[in-house]
Length: 220
Image (tube, rainbow, N blue to C red; front, side, top):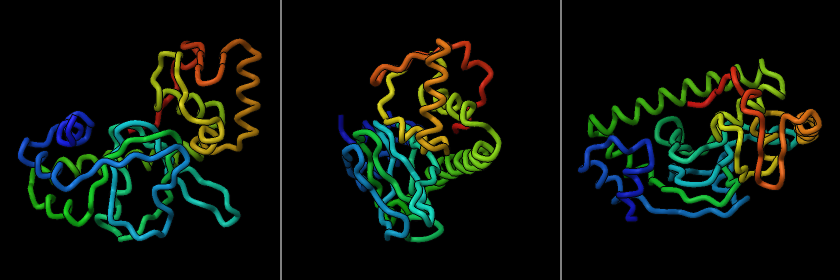
């Protein structure tokens, strides 16, 4: 599939008029990232933002003592690092692949020219409003729920409510994403396994779907 086709099926850019979609495809390029590859670090000068086509990307900041503070796990179809278009020309967070990924890289300067098109600009603004709502919910998420509720919310947000999942990221990355230590997550997993609620073997996770009901998801 050519780049224009990938953009059309990728999610956010789907509703763009054909002409605008073609213009966007002309300035973008595909990029692949291996698991654990760092795309950018906080403070790096940025000339690109991205749309994720497949895999998972972790956005995080580093505390003074070197701990990773999770901001978001990016899902396929979402764009990220677009802040360099408006606020500053340096990335405010770090971004790294937690699985093998395929991305569309968008040069910021050329994209800024496309924003002069009203329809294109309106679509983009709607996406930014959704992301702002996500960040507001994220603050509530990290300051209110306990580890168990965060874990359930993460599963629903990232994989749905079926209760049968293929988990392609490590338990360490999940712990970072929900704002707990790996040890805390390990104790939670052990307790849920011992109680018969969950079975986690390699990348396959089965969890009682009724256990997930009534859990709020803080996705966008």
